Length: 482
Image 1 (cartoon, rainbow, N blue to C red):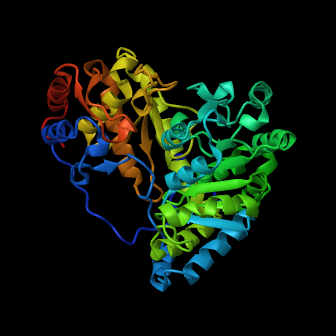
Image 2: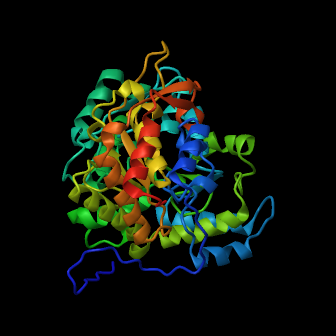
């Protein structure tokens, strides 16, 4: 990994790439931003991209592709069946993960649908380090339940622990002892736990989980969508991995698993996904659902051009310089916000910078969706689109009662190789101003609440005229600035 020191002593991340294609951005005035978020029902998912300056909503499908990926798209074989493009992708996955069987899908949640339909039955349990929104929805709709048995350190918002995504092994063994192994659909480990700050798990922890699964005959499944970030942290934070190459660490992680699935919108930096399977019997149990839901077995709903890009992107994930850029930019943002006293999740994880809203807006109750309110406020005063990752992202209990999230976060995703450092500094500056004026921000209430995955397309309204007051204060402090 490149180690570059500045003579000035300043510590800033240095991009190990150059930009050859650019897209023009626009930054509407603050009054227009208020109009835009109001029209979007205070849901940043419903904003039009033309109204967004920095899109930090997600890293899914919005990462910059390399020149080699773009070139590979031009040699795609668009045969419906038996495509050479599929063979190249399959071979690359076999080389990296060491698993013989591969099922292509259009993205990660399609993998979750197949896994849940095949393995989850009414009354079954899926232990995991932490849930993801779509993962939990697929499991529950098939009659299963999710048991989060992350180590206690994972829910500490401020920490120096390098692997807050680890599963608690004692809790796993107790869960199996209490319910019986036959009730466990599979154990799921998510690389780079999305909802608690992109925190990684250690190779040692995965090996320990493998041991427990072997003792009880339970399947171990890894969600590798955010594997690139997790690999970077394994390499830089775990003593046993420091002398291993990224490829070697990847294989050691894969060797612990029975099934690996991923969204290539994150891992591979193109649009698609897939399931890698070690055992032929498991492969055959899942295979029929691909042509039923996705497409034929050699494209699975993906464009062959994207498949070629994924093949190259997976190989680039084995490059330390490539996978270090995102975590280094995130760490810079986290460090700079901490210097200003702004509450963030530490240590810096992958995927993005996560603002701790329970401390940022400690005056807004969880029943008024403070993370959603902060995401709305941040957009109004900056044009930066972040994502609510809190109570709004949970789903209600069957009796209609609210499920309050363990954490209230605004995730500011850092798509790989997309933003410049000056743009990141702009986001830091506006968050700093908002923190100084945080008492102006109040909560939100639903005006339209979908039953499933409400955070994607639900609509909310402010509980008062606090947004107009925020705009007025912005104008008082910034004058005619955008």
